[in-house]
Amino acid sequence: MAAPLVKLIDRAVIRMARLHLEKRVYGNSHLAEAKALLEEQDFFGNQVEPVDEMKFFGSFDFSCNSPVAGVAPQSSQVYGKFYRCGDNWRKRPVVIMLHGWNGENCYRLLFPLLARYCCRHGINLLMFELPCHGRRRAPSGAGSDFISADLSAMVKSTRQAIADTRALLGWLKQEGCGPIGVWGISLGAWLAGLLVCNDERLKFAVVMSPIVRMDRAIEELEFCVPIRRSLAGREIPFHGLNLVDHRPLTDRGNLLLLEGRHDVFAPQARVEELWEIWERPPIERFNHGHISILVSWKAMRRALRFIEDRAP
Image (cartoon, rainbow, N blue to C red; front, side, top):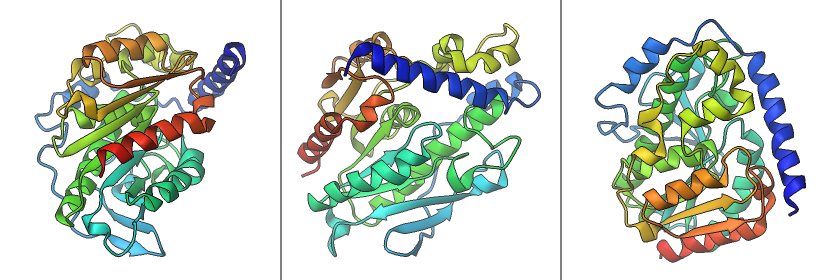
């Protein structure tokens, strides 16, 4: 697609995101609390136990308890869908899908289409609503948005999203599934990157349009102006959550980076930096922006073929 058009789309969405955040600024940044959370010994959930009870209803829907406390009561329950490929699904591979920030439409519309493709090719697909999204979003205050000027709430939601994924991953392993991988988009790609660097049970990962450096995103993106204002010039405590500070635990050939050359949210230079630091895993570059790549069947097809190759 033409660079001016896709950049215009990205900038329009960024402007709307800023207006959205401006309405959801509550109090101060709670910077000290955010730093304390990041220093917790098991922030990345190494001690998280598998889900103890999965409650299935309907053909695909499930719910379970979150293994850690969230920022609001609504986040205590995990809601998702598990598309199983036939009666022998327990012996088949699984890809865990992680959506982007405020990406409920992607979750509702795109992910089920990808699930049908995966199931036809013998791959299970599990997806769930991230904290502060969908049914897990509080109507107001802390927990009403994953990204907000309340950095302690944002860090707590990040920790919960990682713990939720690892608890579900543990349940899948108990059921006998494997190999298991993760595919994240945007915010979900950031989470997927952190997960593949901290959980050796993940055998492959697709990292699509990732937020590579959360600290730089807060410093540079227009929609983060309310967050910068709440910080009042103090240091952003996200260095330990930057993907460039972590290294994958799986072989680099089992990683796929998907990059939009005209991405305004996740600039090409940042993704290229990550590609170099992660020792040049497979990468695909598309003439798209952050939003337009979501409607690129070519990009989706590339990711699906990569998963097929690594989930025999």
